[in-house]
Length: 347
Image (tube, rainbow, N blue to C red; front, top):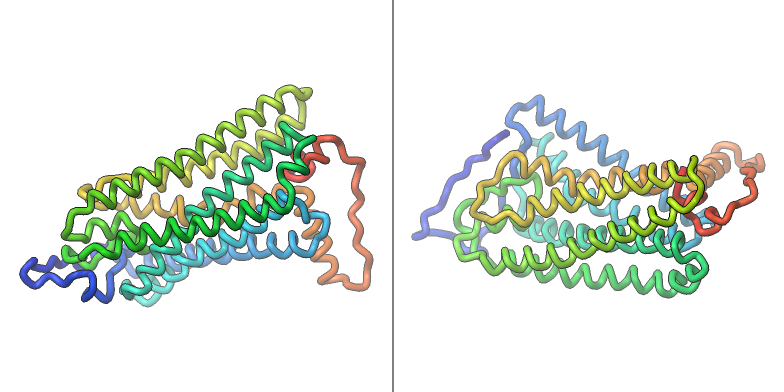
């Protein structure tokens, strides 16, 4: 891994946070060929993520059969994921290609704010989707009341507004600190833990705030998601064994794994004391909470979904065969299809 010159300033002529106008981001490697490989691989991942999420947004908007709460949240999650990965990956690819790791203070502030905002809202959206799945399976008769359009919109707006407040508080607390130890951020994008290591003032309040908020919100959402799936599995086990159980596990378990990776990697990076030196592992783990969820969410929630695939086929048919009538034959839906467990969420 490259170690960008980590010069340290004397406290006698230390610039405070108002005079530091730019920072230096780390590269994954100091070998030029590996930098180009990193840029190409990250660009491919970025394009795949954008295409997958944008296509889901298009499909769920234009197919009226998908205008139900589950796909409303799925569309919001896809928009969020496309924005989330756009905050960090393109800038990292450009830096690798140009060999320039400089980022302005304004750009760093924007990255910190947007990363915290999108991580927070993503976690809430995943939690809401777990609740939607729980109500649909375990309380199907009450589903139209509990998950009506007005409540769905309110939950979405509440997530966004609370995310703005949460991100604003943490961003302001971070950039009110004086930075004097170095301009080098040991990460491929600006994040709070890396910035705290650059401050020459006491950051204990910032660290306590991060730990309390992360454990309270992240831990609470994770417990809720796991609890929802435990109840879902207990309900599924009451059905006759066969393909239905296999379908339930094939969709629910990957979702749990992605959420677990998302939270565990984020907890490791954000909850470590700032006195611990940054390592290569920090940069690798940051990929797991900034790149992996936006890439895999479309696969887990949509590309394994028969209704999504059917809607995609109809859209593709209209694009390439506009003169033909494209019709997908549907069988008689079962009760589980009506509550969109297997028909809507599973392959």
